[in-house]
Each structure stands twice: as C-alpha cells, then as structure tokens.
Image (cartoon, rainbow over all chains, first blue to last red; front, side):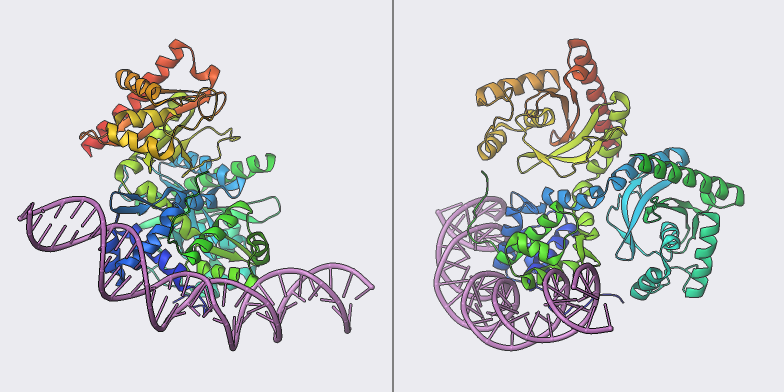
Length: 255
Length: 255
DNA sequence: TTTAAAGTTCATGATGGTCGAACGGCTGGG
DNA sequence: CCCAGCCGTTCGACCATCATGAACTTTAAA
C-alpha cells in the first residue's frame, strides 16, 4: 500500500474533505444522511457544510447539498496552470477525430498519470470523463511513454513510491523488464499498453516534451484489442499519435 | 461586497480553503510564501499543507505546492453529476463547429450561471476555459434564457439574493424591465446579451429543458458585436442555437 | 391538528489547532 | 571549504475552538 500515513494532520480539515467525498458518492445528500454515513452528530456535519457552503465548495438546494462550483473552478486550475495544458485540449480532440478511439492527455503528478483531457465519441458508455483520475505509470501506455523520458533517478523514485502493482496478468511487475521496455519505448518513440491495467484494453501512448527535454505529458489512444492490435494497425496508430505530438510540440515552441 | 460573514463557521477548514485559493493565484507556492501572504506562522501553514497533501488536494514538487489532482477529480463531478451535463459537452462542441463562435454550456447553481462546458477555436487568447466560473443571470444571454424558464417565485428569490448589479451601461437594472424582457425571451425562444456584462461582447442563449419542463441549463454563443448583431445574422444564429438545443433535448429524452 | 423527522442553534467541555522556538538541511557566498 | 542565512520541518504548551448532545424550529405527513 502507499497511503502516506503522515503524522500531524488536521482533523477538522480532514472531516471537511471527507464530507466532500461523501457528497461525491451519493449525489446530493442531506445533513442527516451524511451524519449517519460518517457516524457523527448532525450538528457537526452541519457546521462543516455551513463553512463549505460559505466558500461555495458546496451549494445547498432545499435541504440537499451538492458539490459546488468553486470546487470545479479551483480544480480546473490544474488544467489551465500551464499554457501547454490548455493547448493540449484541442490536440486531444484532433487525435480522436483522426483515430475515432478514446483519446486522452495526461500529465505526471506525484508519480501517477493524471487525466487532464479526454475526447471520445457520442457513444458514452464508459466515456465518463474521468478528469483528475490517476493511473499508474508502469502499466499504462502514456505512463510508460512519460517514464521513458524521465531521468533514471526520478524513475526509481516513482517506482519506489508506488511499486509495480499487478493489475492484470499482463502487468510488468519486474523492474528489469520495465527498464528494458522503456528502452524499447525510447527507440520506437511510442509505448504500448497490452491490457496491462484493464483486461481487453489496449493503448498506444506518446510523450510530449519541451525543447529543453522536460516532459509535459502524454497523449494516448485506447481501445479494445481488435481496434489497436495487429502490426499494421498498430504502427499506423503509433504514427498518428506521434504526428499529433509533433505538431503539438511544434505549436508550443512557436507560441 | 458579498462577503457573507456567517455566524458559526469553522476556522480551520476556512484556512485550508484560503490556502487553496492562494495556491490558485500564485502558482506553485512555498510554505513561507503562503505564510507571509496570509500572515500566519509557517508551522500552521505547514500543518494544513500536510493535511491537504495527504488527501491529494495539493501535491508537492520539491518545496513547491500545487493544487492536486483530487481537487480536479472532485470538482469535475459537478460536470458529470447528471447524464444530461455529460451529453451537453458534445453539443457544445457541435455548436462551436457550426457557428465558429465561442460556445458554452452553463447551468444555474445558487442563482448564478456556472460554466460547465466551453468550446472555442485554437485562437486561445481569451478562451482560458473558465469552467466553474460564475456569472449573473440577469445580464447574460444564457442567464436570461434560464430565468425565463423558471417559476416566478424562484426568479424573485434569485433577484433578491443577487440583485441586478450594473456591469456595463447596457445592464438591465430594473426588475420590471427584466420581466418584460423575459416575456420576450419566452416568445422568441432565445435571449440576447447586448454587451450587458462585458463591453463589446454580445451573446445569444437558449435554455434546455426536460420533458417535465425543468430547466437543465443553457447553451450560448458569444462574440464581438459585429459577429452577432444585425437582424439577419442574429436570427440565423438564434436558429442554430435553438436547433442544437432541440436536438439535445431530443437525444436526452430518447436516452 | 398532531406527530414525526429533519435542520438549526446553543452552551459546554475536551480536543486538537495554533503558535513560537528550536532543529536540521540546503544553498550560495566569502 | 566553511560559514551564514533561509527555509522546511518538528515539538510542546496553551488556550481557542471544534465536536457534541440537547433544545428549539421548521417542514411534511397523517
């Protein structure tokens, strides 16, 4: 496990956050509902909600509380912090236009791959834009693409922190194997996820870097086995993704 | 000002939130930087940051703290809470494709118009996706479109809460005038913003409702005067927006 | 009208957040 | 190479303030 059990943490803030998590799960909750779930008196919850409401972290409709717009605004700052992230959005969409596969743009934060942009067709289904979601780097396409561009000590540091958890039977769990694969990624310029974190799901990912060589993030396309595998199809897709990334890097350099 | 000095609010949570706000402003801050800005001891700030970090509300890179992915994830829940909101995204994009004008989808929350989706061209400039931002209802196109669909007591309630602040010389500040305009909006099926909240910025907005008549939110297109005004142009745009909304409502009803 | 259930307020007591000081690590300059 | 300052972090004590349950108000239902 990797739960950083840090020593001195503020209980009050922690409960406020826990309440927000509850609000996320059961959508639109009442005071007593949360109180029961968290096994705390109504008055306590009420106090927290009053504070969160004042800051617009939650809003109240009748007797129901919902996650509020200020939280959306603040969270979204993650996606707009860097101009490169903003620019990445349209490239994510172009990537989808060209491949018709679920396309995402992720960045590395705290050793994980964080979704910043997604693009997928009308057929929602599993498209549920999971912005802010975090996946491992060692068993995803973008993840490996990003890792491959990082300096080795940094890679070690990340692997130390998160390990190489096995999520499917295809997951690489050996460091040596992973480093070999990263080498291959560097050579061919793209990484592949062969159902290593979800069964049936294959993906191709490419990292985007600045002129300086720093990694910005990575683009990837994901789909069921049949839509991504096969040597021809694979190299065709890899080409498409690499092209998008090149154009992205270029436009960024020119800006 | 609108600083609600509410009665019993939790100081600790409030400080944590204030820290997040600081992190939003100055991007990537150090402990002492925030401490100084907030005029509090370093140790206090450190405690808060430690807590926020544990919950991934912030992440730490070196000695710098940034807003973290969990905040993005939680905030984004606002946009995915209702399937209708998720569906709205692609219609926002279609609206942009058809009009080449900055298109947004907003919903009413707490008496304000909250941005949930935006679509605009590559030319960034002012495109800075301001998800979660909140505008008034009385002086925006979507705002008025939404208001027009609400029951009267609700409208009064909202106007009581926020008033009709004058933001440009075109802002409607009289309730009677506003109600007259809302009547007109109902007749023609769309609302217009004639530089009422920002100088030079015109917009056309249409509300989307459920079969039941409940308002879901509203779509709008915004642009400088010349791109939106003129009777022909205006009614053409109004038509486009109304069509998008119709299709949106239809697809939603079929789902 | 009565009853119940939920939201809100309040006073109290104990928890735990705040604070200043001290420690230790890092950086840059002499 | 060492020293000096700066900054992040840890620690212990004080006392503000948060958690709590009970009382009160409001709303909904019967």
